[in-house]
Image 1 (cartoon, rainbow, N blue to C red):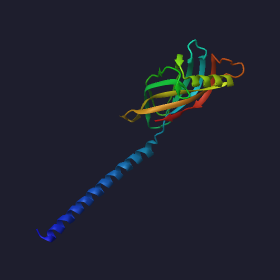
Image 2: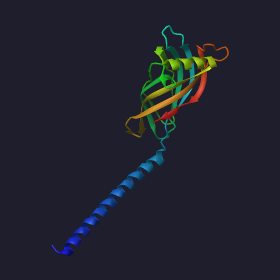
Image 3: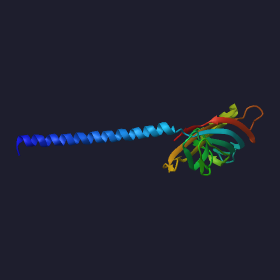
Amino acid sequence: MSTKDCGHHHSSHRRLLRLILIGAAGFILLVLFVVFLIWVILRPTKPRFTLQDATLLNFNLSSPIPNTLSLTMQVTLSAHNPNARIGVYYHALRLHASYRSQQISLPTALPDTYQGHHDFTVWSPFLYGNTVPVAPFVLASLQQDQSSGTVMVNVKVNGRVKWKVGTWVSGRYHININCPAYISFAGDRSNAEGVKFHLLQSCSVDV
């Protein structure tokens, strides 16, 4: 093979490689454009959760068992799907009460729910915790907050969501919701048991 033929052969390989790279880059740009176009059309937005109220039925730091807490509370939690073209499936939602990142109630299951465009869903579950073990420093902090008049209990929800666009349904995604509930023991509410607190507290949502 002559030197001229070798040069022509290498030049053809370079042209082929250049065409492959241009084609791959064009395909990637096309996919990105389609994803951007879908985003512009659908404008996906996370669901919005609100803790409407909480009724404290039992809050006992004087259990016979040391370093334990007994808690019974009913909460009203609402969810809003703000999307105009996307439905939301909620699956395996579990909520519990937490204080300073320590779980102080058993998990309560919420029913699987589908939420259409702009729909609202309201749940009113109970949260229970009977002689729940808590760290001594957490119990001391709870007692201090109760004496000062306000205890902040976080209502947390964990589960899965799926998105629905037309007949297409996505895979499952994790969803985590955190709702602060401020329980007041001030004034004549020495124990606050049986008192309903109207909160209308917005919750943080991570998907």
